[in-house]
Image: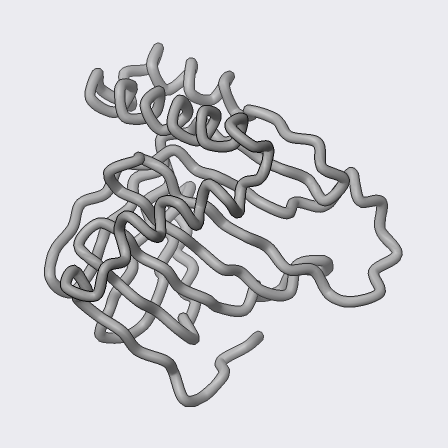
Length: 184
């Protein structure tokens, strides 16, 4: 199971998956009571250059918007434009811990979209790796993203509608921009 820790003080994303730990420096981050947004470089990837992440804990979704390098000679059917994880979030003052709940929704650069990793979700249920609350959160997140996306078939419109709800100034907890770019 994948767990991600977003550390506000260090502006660091630490991804724990399959016994491995990866750390990524965040360049720009804003945190509200029920919304987190950051930008960082996509480290060591041949196609994707940057990540913009929107985490909506009440919606049980984390949305990665991926930017590709310019002038790539790659089939657009192979590239992700958006990757949405169904998640649950444990929040504290200095960090949020994000538990990936296996189900994902992707939109590729050619415009096609898919629900993926249903097999992994099913395996996690069978092995009791996830409990009934996790299952409910995953299905709730999937329902939220599908309803939001299918409303206009414009994920940015849906993301912006959630940002408008959750990013009121009075709810801001943290805001910082890293002076140095820690790229690759």
